[in-house]
Image (tube, rainbow, N blue to C red; front, side):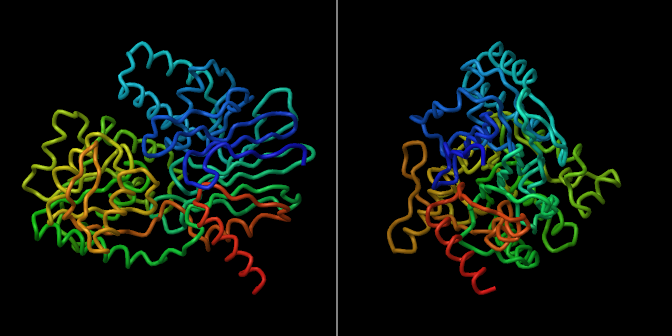
Length: 440
């Protein structure tokens, strides 16, 4: 192998994703994220400022948020990604600038520079990420999010594959991850995410439907609200899709669903434009002129001055934190208002990164089980939590069986590295995978 792969983030944690791939003499940065949970003393590693190109796996802030500082520092190389990833990233990054009080001129300048550097690359099409180097990069579907990709690098001496975040094969909206790899050449190094390498998901959509049906019926009966600390793009899309399906089949009464963030539901628009990224079931209503995520009862709350009214509605409402994992200021307000009420149900979809509000709620539940009073620290205040919490299978990340399926499809793998997972998840996946192969 004519280079090396260096982890600059997500070494033994799920955030932030920053990986330096040195291959064929070039330095390529795969993702440039920031930690989840709003760490204030964190800085980008110095190594990112000397890279030749950036390649994005998908548009979540723990994979793209560091681009704000990178471009501010004077970076002028290309930024590669699928068209969906680049469009969504642009919106999230500029919206982050506005949310942090940056001037309109600063935001416009950043957007102009970003547009100048962005290079869209379709799935399956090899491209030269840096001119003057004999290197090819190819994006392959990862199934985690609209536009999400695994990245394959090839030079005359090396073949390296970075998985990116792999989605579960149970996703009701997206296609599954790519497994039809070229078998003519061995893979020198694989970097595999391990978020859920320590568990196996229940692969039964009926079970999840039944659980959600019970949550909704209980909420309506108690005239409560459902709070979902999950980014509006990805997990919440799947939740909305599932709720729509249950309502249209008559299993639940229709209820209001609010995406509470400045962008509202505009981030969902790429899901309609990039039809090749959907699975066949979700394409059928789109083909009939009925967008899968555009239906009665689903609305957006863009203006902060009206956000507080959501928790005061007499009608049961699903309130989604569009900023992700309960980190948004608006959602903290809803939590302060509604967590002390026993009729409230908090729905946690999958992994809650350490430091996020979803993670704090999980810890509070464990304290409650141990017999102590359950409180959640929110914006410097201890909030009593009488609300109940429901955990749902994480359909946004592949489980260990699916990770193994992805890995097994690669030819002649010489070395595997794990990242984007806790040390415990990585160790458990390693032991499980070795035992599985020995037993087979």
